[in-house]
Length: 117
Image (cartoon, rainbow, N blue to C red; front, top):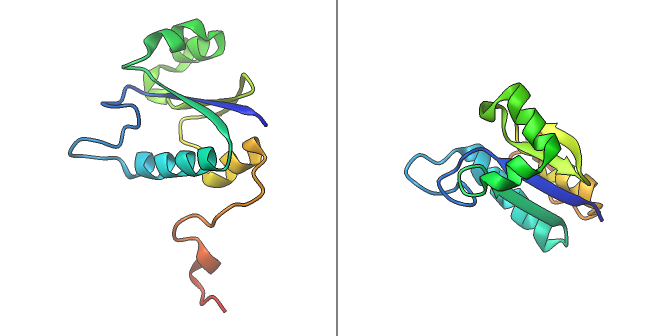
C-alpha cells in the first residue's frame, strides 16, 4: 500500500472544515480522506499554518512552494513523488493510489443523471 501525504494550504484547523465559510471542496476531500483511511489507506495531512516545518523539511514540497507559491496548494505526494497539485484528490484517485478495490460512488455521480435501473 502506498503512503499518501497531503500538504494543505494554511487552514484554520487540521481539516479545514470549520468556521463560518466552509469550502465545499474541503468538506468533500475530508469525507473522501476519512473513507480511504477507514479502508486502510495510509494518509497523512500537513497544514501550512500549523505544521510549517513539514513543508520546509520536504525538498519536493519546498521547491514547489518556491516555484508556485502557497496559493498553488494543496500538493499530494504518493510514495514521496508528486501525484497532484492545485486541488484535492477524488475518492477514485485515493482508492487507486492506496490500492482500495471497493470504491463507493462519488456524490451526484450515479448514472450521470439518468434513471438508475
